[in-house]
Length: 388
Image (tube, rainbow, N blue to C red; front, side, top):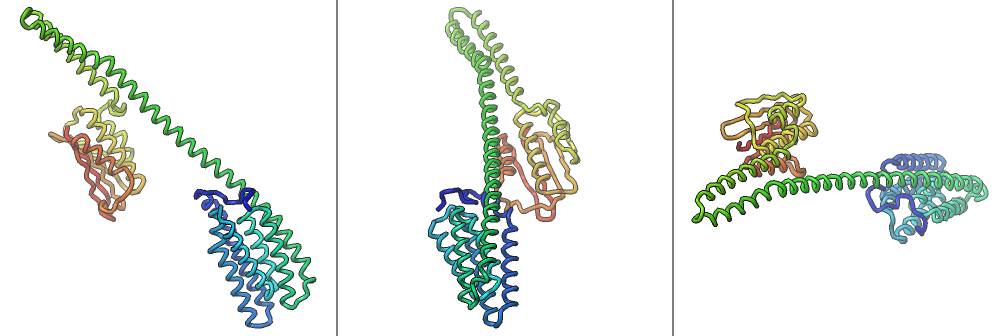
C-alpha cells in the first residue's frame, strides 16, 4: 500500500518536527469539527440526536488527535493498523452522516487526513468510500439521497484536489528538510576531518622536530658515553673532551626541547598570561595581584583555557550584570577566579556537559585544583589554582 512515498514517511525525528510546523492542520480540523457539531445540532429535531451528533464528532476528532496524528508522524506503520484506523473512522463517519446534516464537512477532514496516512491511491479509495457513506447515511436517516449526491460529489472533488496539493507541498518540504539535514551532517563531517587532519599534521610536525633534534642529540650523547667508557683508562684527556661534548650536546637538546614546547604554546600567550586574560575578558573587570612572572607553557595554557570556559559558561547561562576576573600571582601558585552576579545554580545538582569537568581535569593534570562556589540567586565563582 506504500508503493509511493507517503508523506511523513521518515524514520527519524525530522518528520515530527515538520508536522509541528503544520500545526495549523490541527486547528483546521478542530474548527471543522466544531462547525459540524454546531450546525448539525442546530438543525437536529430532537435532543437525543443532538447528543449523538456531539458524541460522534468528538469521537472522530479524538481518534484523529490520539491515533491518526501519531500514525501520520510515525510512518511507516503496519498495514493492518492503517486499515483498522481508516475502517474505524469510516464507521464513525457513517454513523454521523445518518444523524447529522452537516456531516459532509467532516468528509473534507477525513479525506485530507487519508492523504497524510497512505499512498495517493489509498487516499482516493478512502475519499470515495466516505462519499458513499455520505449518501448512504443520508438514506438511512430517512432523507432523499438524491438531494445529497451533487454536494457530496463536489466536496469529494475538493477533498481530492486539496489533499493532493497539500501532499505535494509537504513532500517538497520533507525533501528540503532531508537536504538540510544531509548538508549539516556533511559540514560536521568536514569539520571533524579537518580537526583530525590538523591534529595529524601537528603530530607529524612535532615528531619530525623530535627526530631531527632531540633523537639525534640523544644518539650523540649515547655514542659519546660509549667512547668515554673506552677512554677512561687509556686517554684521560679524551675523557674530558667527551664530557665537554656530552654537556654541550645535552644543553643543545634542552634548548631544542624548550623551543618545541614554546612553538606549541598558543600565540595569545606571547605577551604573558596577564595580557591574554585582559584581551579575553571583554567587558569583564580584571584585577591582577602579585608580581606577574613567566609561567611554564602547560600551566599558562590551563589557566587561559579555564578562563575561556568560565566566561563562555557565564555568557551562555548566567546573563549577569557584571563579571569580575582576578588573576593572583602567589608565592608558589597562580590563581584565576571568575565571579559573576548571575542567577547561580546548585553545583551538586549540575549534570551533563563537559565545561566544569574539563576545567577540573586540566587543573588536575598540572597538579592544581578547580573549585565552584554558587547558590541559586547568589551568583557563581569559579576558581582555578595551579602550582607555578
